[in-house]
Amino acid sequence: MEGIELKIEGMSCEHCVARTEKALAAVTGVSEVEVRLEPGAATVTGENVSLQDLIDAVDEAGFTSTAS
Image (cartoon, rainbow, N blue to C red):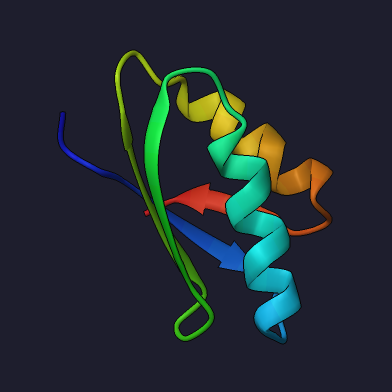
């Protein structure tokens, strides 16, 4: 599966990155997550991953996300 790209607003440090990675990795179907502080983005790969579930996970971690 091709990676899903997300823009993430509100991250300011590596702790934010780690919290976002943990939240995205917990979504059903996710096999790999890469979160980047600059430019505030994430790439998620997996099988049958719901975009809305990813956005909700980022929101629950305290950040704002949109599909890029």
